[in-house]
Structure formats: C-alpha cells, structure tokens
Amino acid sequence: MLSRLPLQVDVIDPNEQIYGINYMEQLPITAKEVAKETALDPVLRKVFTYTLRGWPYQRDTELLPYSRKANELSVDNGCLLWGQRVVIPASLRSRVLQELHLEHPGVNRMKALARSFVWWVNLDKDIEELVKTCEQCQNARHRPSTTNPPHPWLYPNRPWERVHCDLAEFGGRQYFVMMDAYSKWPDIYDLGTSASTTKVIDALRRSFSSNGLPERLVSDNGPQFISLEFRDFVQSNGIRHQLTPPYHPASNGQAERLVQELKKSLRGKPAARSWSHQLSLFLLHYRSTPHTTTGKSPAELQLKRTLRTRLDLLFSRGQADLGQQNEQQFQEASSQVRELIPGEAVGVWNPRRDGRGNWLYGTVMQKVGPTNYMIEVEGHVRYVHIDHLRQRDSRSMSGGLPTPEQTDIPITPTSSKELIPPVISVTQESDAVEIPGRVKCI
Ligand SMILES: [Zn+2]
Image 1 (cartoon, rainbow, N blue to C red):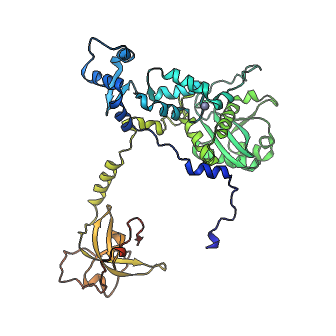
Image 2: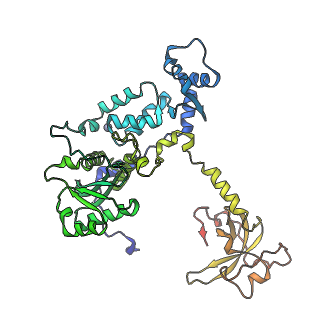
Image 3: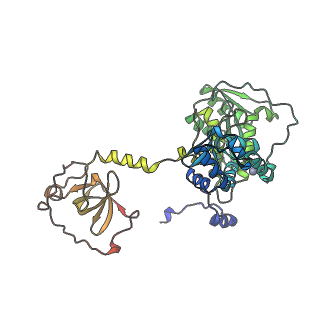
C-alpha cells in the first residue's frame, strides 16, 4: 500500500482548499435551455410566434429590432435564430456573456466570438460594458505602442510556413510558446522550472508530431536558440531558422502578443484549477476564437474546420445525440452476436491471473450491452462478456474444460434435461447482490 503513496506532495495553499469546496465549473448552456427560456421570455415568445406564423401589421416598439430582421429570422428546435446565430433570451444573457468572457479576450475578440454564435439587442453594448468593468481586462490591455511599427513580415501563403517562437516565464515556470504567422495557431508547452535547449527541442518535436515541420522558425537570440544543439536540430529537419534583432522584441511580435495573452490567462486562473487545466482552456479558447487579424479562428485556417466548444451546445446541431447513436451501434453489434435469454442457465468462465481459469454456474439476468450480460453467479451479480459465457450443457461444463480462447462451442437450443443442476445454491438475500457499477467484472 505504501508503494502507492505519492512520493512528493505539492504544497497545498489553504485558500485553494477553501475554494475547492465551493468551486465548481459552471455547466454550459444548451440549446434545450435556450428553447425553454425563449418560451418564457415575454418578447422572444412573440417574435418566435410571428416568425412561424407571420408578422402582424401593428407592432410594439420592443419588437422593432426583431421585425427589422424578420426576413433573416428562423426557428430551430424551439430556439430563435438570426442567420447562423442563436437569439439569446434575456434570462440567459449574463451567463452567455460569462462564457464569452471566460478567457478575458478583450472587446474585439469577444465581439468576434459572439458574432459566430449568438445575438441579442444591445449585445455589443453589453460586451463593452462588461469589459469596461473587468479589472483583469483593463489591467492586461496592451500599452499603446510608442515604438516603431513591428517588423513588416509578409503574410505567408499557408499554415506552418513561418512559425514564431518565444519563451515566457510565469509563476516560476517556463513556457515555450509557438505561433503560426498564417493561421495564428498557438502551441504552448510547460517546460517546468527551467528552459534548457533540450526541453525546447523536445517541445518542438511534440508540436511537429501533430503539425509537421515548419518551413521557417523565427525566434530571438536567447541562449537556447543560438546553441549548437538547436542549430543541429533545425538544420537536420530542413527548417530555416531566423533570428530577430537583439533587444527588439517587436520583431517577434506575434509570439510576444501570445505571451501577453497567456500571462493574462494564467493570472486569472481560479485557485482550484491547475496550471495545466488553465493552459488547456486557454489554448482551446484561443484556437477556436476568430482572430482579429485574419477574421477567422486559428483552427479554421490551420485545420480547415471549426473546433467544437461549449458554445456549440447553444445549437441543437451541437448536441451529440449519444442516446440515438449508442442505440444504433447497439443494434448493429447485437445482430452479429448470439443472444442469451434472461433466465437461461449458463457456464461462466472465471479467469485467473495465471491465465487459467474454471467454469462456474450462472443464470442470465439481463442483457446490458451488445456483448455484455448481467449474470447471477453464486448469489452475486457479475457483468460478463459473451465470449466468457457458454450454454450450460454437459460438454462445456465438465470434462475437457476448453478455455474461451481455445474453442467456440456452438450454442444449441436450450433443453432443461441436458443441464446439470447447479451445485451452488443461490442465496436470495438482497445484500448478496452487488450494486451494478461496482460489481466484479470477469
Ligand atoms: Zn475580463
């Protein structure tokens, strides 16, 4: 037992523990909720009905912003849509704003993100108000540039043509930051407490494993980037390495800006969230939010698709219809395997750690999956795969004892006469049956 204890325990901030009790990630807002609130919203309710049945000649002033868009409004699964955007009822607006504001993207990016998903009257104004009152957004606003405009890099023709990289330090940890000039796709790696050349190369390798090799890599002349090891690495991978002038960080502005955004995000981390959790959230948010320079999300340009996020849950298309899908898979899979009937007496293979095993008597209780059954064995409930179940007859339960892997005994029609009476009496006490989910799995 002692060997399982962690050797090192992170120092736990007492505040963090207090937070941990009350802290819970807020659930995303779904299309279902939007539909429910739309039906309860005094204004949207009318708009919804008029969109379905046609607009009356006399209109209330509160309906004007909607009637002006009448031709572009539609309904879908109880939600009102303006073009591709969901119209959010008043009761959910503050929660949607929170979701959009999650990473403190600032006014412009927050508006761009909102435009891909939602709309309501005064949406832009609400966003401006929120950012104005958010200390974190205000503190992290970029200082107005007083220096010369950054190095006029040419805009590349394709993703991964030119990648900017940099190192950032935050809270005693080093981060390796990469940014593609074309798609604005960010890659960030936590290097731990020190940023050695080896660690930087390792991070690059990890990025290349999913993105491929870039044509050009731009960095400042930090010691890691001018080391012989680094030069060998980029040369052997056919990458051109370009250094930016010393003491002129603006030349590597793309990576610099990403570093600022990253620090802003890390600074705003809730106490109960881990650094790696925060970093992942930051990356997902950055990759899926339209970039102010390109007007598209990094994912769209880099991967040629949008990433599914919690905001997609606002649309009925964003709901993964797991129930239906699973049912379909269940049916398909079921048709290919043999069926056992509840109440049927079966032999249950009981494998042992040494690879051998023995057959036990059991009774089918019910089918719980395409290939899994709930079986009563010796008064206990077990979940058993069909491969480990045999019809209980004289051949399979006595004598040769073939293991499930050795042979596949064909199922013959059940006949009670052939069955060997169970040698174990099954107790009917309720506590003998284990709770499903915690049952032993053979
Ligand atoms: Zn903010």
